[in-house]
Length: 112
Length: 115
Image 1 (tube, chains in turn red, green):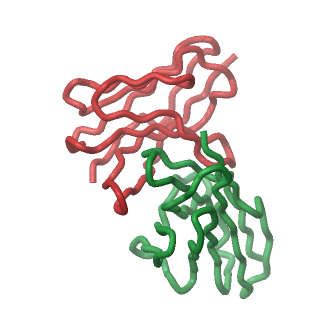
Image 2: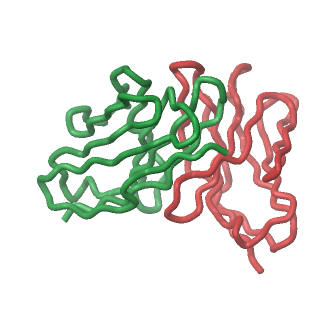
């Protein structure tokens, strides 16, 4: 299974872009990168996912390097409500073998 | 995004009793549901995966006779913690996905306290 490495914590000023890095150097060619976040005492919230190309939605952008060994989640204008633990996950398997395994994530603190 | 609802949000039970937690997909058919457990200051740990109409597949180290999972319909899965003990106190979270989309959506979690 591809493992991910994330910094344990990061700080960001409100209104600025938050760039959260993730290393997944052992990722396989057909494995997707997913990002979820968990606000204290709530269930995780889906943010975005990608395979090879960069992706953007209303919440964030996902930049995946050409060799796919790392990615960056970008929150373009962080707000105080974006303070959460952000998890970068490599999806293991497909179909009936689909599984999301969570690591320790990055605690992003957005400061006023 | 799709909505997954858990019930109850929190529960307190006596040691030795059983507790059932429900997980419902409100606006999609959940062909696969997942159950996680999260202890304080730790990450989510996958307990089991269940496909509708099939027996659940448990992760290594999770007792299937203690954590009973039923996924009898495309919108409902239940987790029953049998003969609960204080060490079973934790935050239990379910997740669900349909057969088409690749993302899974999570419930709000259930805080179980065994006294």
